[in-house]
Picture 1 (cartoon, rainbow, N blue to C red):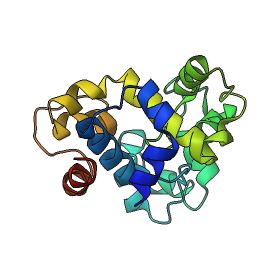
Picture 2: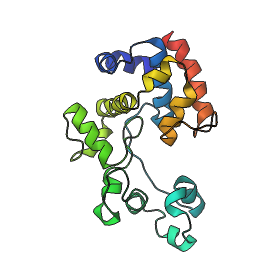
Picture 3: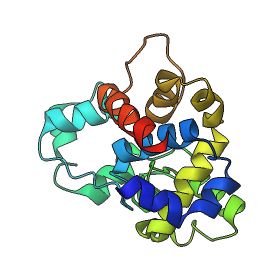
Length: 198
């Protein structure tokens, strides 16, 4: 079982970030399992249809023509630089920050400002070396920093999967229960990890 293996391998890191109770572990591993399959990954951003691109990036493409959207299809680098331009500390489309600071890690650290934060907490220069998040240890540590920064242990202690899922997926707690992307999968995984870590 991957979660148990990781919890033993990175016991010191988990304790450092206070993921130190069965309930906290269950919530943490349920979320990183949903987000990344507990693997070190970087966001792909390869979209082959206009509909898929619009669904994934509703706001950046809102009010834009199909012809406009189509120029970004099948080009992950160009897509990232457009949809993440001037967000989360990134520069404009030409800066290349969108691709450089696309989501990485087991929860998906995104944007220059979040890579700067990760660097500040760990002392590792992720700003200059964002591809370090392709490594398992760095990827997990990025998720732990995100978890602590967003005070998710508070909600884990209260067993509030909806709040945790909202913050990870939407960036804030919403009024509607279960509206985070993939909520049912997150909930199903939580049941499994509660059994594993009980």
